[in-house]
Image (tube, helix red, strand yellow):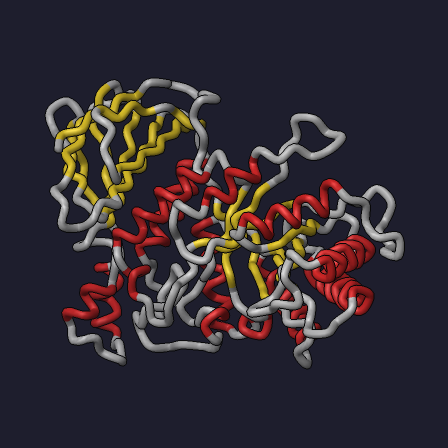
Length: 442
């Protein structure tokens, strides 16, 4: 199918929404971040993807969890990252005890993390894994949330506190009604003037566009006493793997789906965090632990050997788009599976084209109309380029990678690079691919 992409606006326009920025990702329990190889990945993601937050799941009922969290906060300080602490009440833990534990956690992490980062410290209060007693529908959990919010604010008035980390509309409604429309319990010592909820977190169980219905509902929630202000929505975890050793993240089609999700979610939320950061860390929802097998299908955006996965390229290109002013692009004809986003920065106009149509569909041919410059620089992630996984499989999936093999896989992990004359050349966009196009005005 032939499709024309026409540049409609040459400068920023309110009609064009930027993609949802991804400011960090999941690093599992704090003890995992204390390992040098995981810390190395955190530094790579900060430098190349602009991550500023590291999401840590802190089990307050586990022995040593506070000490590990304090040490992890110190490590993050050295990397210029701020901690995003995910906490939940333990079985049978009352509100007062939970609030006191969160206060100790924040106070200890603040002492380690305040200097050297952007000053942010975030606490996300969730119901906890497989917890019925802690369900956000129940008043008991909401009382514990209030206690945790008050404890965090007593320790650090500028800490961001929110919840409930769910995509269930009923849970979200119950949470919103409680924190925005009801007064806190009288026995909760909440600092005067401090907000009870700074963000509403939506945790998506899998990377699909459909769960955004929950976020759409939240966007229209009006905060009482502040007409026109909307509840700030954070996608606290997207792209979570449904199963261990899920190699879907090693495919270009998945990167295209991630880009589509973040582009469409742009108007609906403030920011997002990826479910997984590093393949070294197994998904905590699937048991956690460490994995060092090469290209084993982990939940991260970097492989064990620091190779960028297709989603890494998607997040990098979306970050670069976000550095400019959004511009509008007309797609003629509208094509199922084809999602575009563009921005202008100085003389450069950048375009990201995600084609997440099934790989058995015919490829799309693009023609660019109204774009500045004579040529375009093109980078592409597809089934043949931008992922080391297929090449590793073709080599027999070796468990050990020597320098020669690692060099070959490093080359395979890079996007395909080319250039095109805008006046005479069309661009082929195969299904299950992601294409970055940059033109430069004379």
